[in-house]
Amino acid sequence: MKAFLLHKDRDFDFGAELPPNHKDLIQDLEMGSVLESMALGDRFLFEVSTKVVLASLRDSDAILYRQRVLVDCIAEPEVVRDMYAIAVAALEDKRGIWAYSSQIPSSILSGAVNQLEAAVVRLKQLRKIADDHAERFHSAGLTTLFRTLQHELDDEYFRTISFHLKQLRFRDGQLISAQLDRDNSGIDFVLRSSDRGRRGWKERLGMVPRSSYTFNIAPRDEAGANALSDLTSRGVNLVANAAAQSADHIWSYFTMLRGELGFYVSCLNLWDRLVAKGEPVSYPEPRSWAERVISFTGLRDMSLVLRAEAPVIGNDVGADGKSLVIITGANSGGKSTFLRSVGLAQLMMQCGMFVTADTYRASVFEGVFTHFIREEDATMTSGRLDEELSRMSTIADEIRPNSLMLFNESFAATNEREGSEIGRQVVSALLDAEITVFFVTHQFDFADGFHRQRADSTLFLRAERRSEGQANYKLVVAEPLPTSFGEDIYYQLGGWLDSDSDRPAALSGATSASEQRVAHGLDAR
Image 1 (cartoon, rainbow, N blue to C red):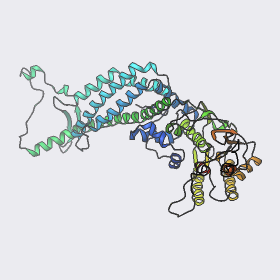
Image 2: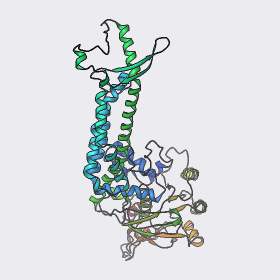
Image 3: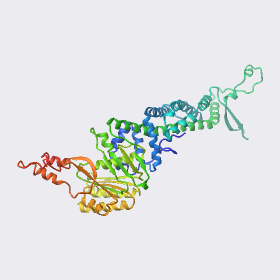
Image 4: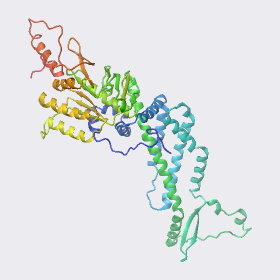
């Protein structure tokens, strides 16, 4: 049997390696809070969630297949959690049963029978859930699962397996047939049904001739006992192997079922957390790469939503047909948060999950890559620019056409002219390779260059600011400005601190936490 909950025609490969850039994705997109909310402290669920979320699907039909299963799970969470609990309990049963590690066939057979008897109990529980709840599910994945459970685990199956397991206990001894080779050694050992070895009542009463004869081995005849054990092992060897393989097959099914259901249980945990916060949650609409689509309304950074106590402001963007999106504006205006929201939403969509947005529609990318600003190397073995260029070189070796590349303040560790030129060459090469780029930057020279040369294929967003200079964390479509808003600090340090001057009514405001401390005279440096 197969679960087929994450793919319609194959099992999910939980043994596959994570993408080479998985550490960058987790760090840059702050995925830790999302994965922790999915796992709720369960290490197994954390590992499953990490592997599934980072193993992006690249086919819109495959995404929708998984998404529809998730819709069913959210509609009937208790049923899904019960099935997951059965799979977990089955594997706990296995750990509590003596394993057949011995090479002796009789020991292998005994251990396999014990495990099969325990597994049958859990299979019956799964079958009952299928009988009771199958009609309440509509997705192809779950309806196929329930149909398989009802068809393959029917009453006849349980009667048959119970009969054979009872036989393999050998309550009436073991009946083995064999033939003699030319040297009188035994060959062709076959285990027979014990029913054939039972003597009739007339034979037991001596009313008819005996059909078989017996002999007893003396209690101290060690050689005879060893010979008999060898004969028995040769007789049950094939059956022992078959029983062990059957047990392994059932346990592999429970293992896969636990893993695939575990992903959906993790999604249920995250769904409950987001709904409790009152944030919008929706199912994204995957499109083919050929359509070059990426548009959304009310998109929020899921990691920030999970950490913040206050409501998070969403953004609306229509970047359909655009290969480059450049985000500019003052510090602390929500640019980096916006960039993370895009990366997280894309990963959530391409693993079949929901997103924190009113609507989200995007093409399916071959991969998602990030290049965010890092702290300077504490060991001083290299400068920040060297480190950025090294990471970019690694990305260049891994990235493929039709991917999504997210830059956050990249190549800003040098002067603006040099940093802009590096960024311009890197981004131009990526665009030529059919890679979609989102770039957060303060470098006007870089942004203005693309505004003059690629305005038709580029969307320019800018962090909005109120008239008082405070950020409202909304991005609007606007061309880049040749200012870092340092004038705000000038007015606050000069005009506001001058007792004879009134504070300007339309202050632009401090653009970062450090600037706010300076403006209020709280930073002694």
